[in-house]
Image 1 (cartoon, helix red, strand yellow):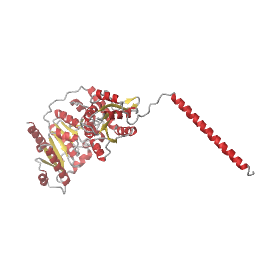
Image 2 (cartoon, helix red, strand yellow):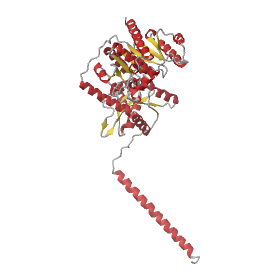
Image 3 (tube, helix red, strand yellow):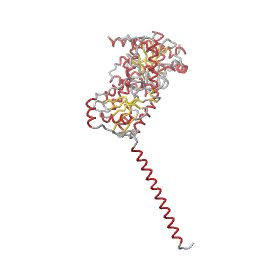
Image 4 (cartoon, one colour):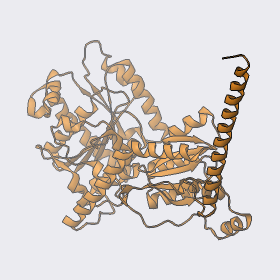
Length: 490
């Protein structure tokens, strides 16, 4: 090819490339025009999620504020695990003193499948009231409110409506606020401003974690209906009988509280009959093991029931071979929070009208439920072992009782494993604790064998040192408890 032809070929190739490029650009512009024309003839689409904050026009907002009551009325209560249109509905209550913000949060959730906002409250107290009445799955709680702040409201709500899980909303991103919120019972903490996705993910996460509690509550409601149908409800007596009510507590784990509670109850049953034993260690109670009883019902069946009666309570009590009746702890630790302090008080007050004696086994942690049990008792037994840590904690607990204005006349101390090798001498214990009533149970391997067999010491070895000591303990405690009750009631 001659040198004169090469420039001509290059020019032709460049021209072809330019023509192809122009053709493609024209085609692309044509398609865009057709698409735009089609859009003009289509109705506007509603976005799948609204903007982060949508505010009504000023005139609409003014009308809303003038017409809204202190809290918005909600529909009738629905089951917590309601199934609607084949999908599980998560019921949401929004609590925020700023009505515009409450509206905006509700709008964030409006288009989300499986979530429904059942109401809005504009203060902490109104939020608690609405949660008690409506029982939402999730409460979205603002932290800064004029009547009571969100942390205080959350703490009260966790006691009154433990099945409603709280998510705190706050402009404060400080970790101190987060710790306070979680300590009060909140399950999540969302910092404003948040997106719809962030809020929805938090709601679903909290709801998923709380599923066992929701399902248990619904099962317990169903059981309540069945029990009511089986036998007509009886009204509880308004004035309890003069019943010795003995709470056993230890401020130090491993002191043998449950073993002593179980065997003391059996001893009192043998001596007086008609004794009730309550396992108030709601998370990890093990009276069922000490007395070899199948936990097919118990105190967990009473959660979510506002009004108890003797007949209903009798339905969940379990008989023991000795003749005493047991009220066992919930079968799963996460169900403990469903039993409120008020529920504990109701239970004990009813038992006082039905039994000759009531014994209450408690946990080491001084929860509000345990404090309610101690308040309802008319005699408290503190279980310790002859060791420095146990004595130190017992001393602190006795000081706390005095600050709470408990009379030490209604308090006794049981020294378990009193003669253990290397233990502190008995006279030193009484000198340090300065309690008017101190009882002693000796070290006895036969008691350990009875525990592992799931029987009382009286079934295993009635003549053992611990059996004799507990028999004597039952007589002395009965005298002290009944004498103490008489003095207090005069």
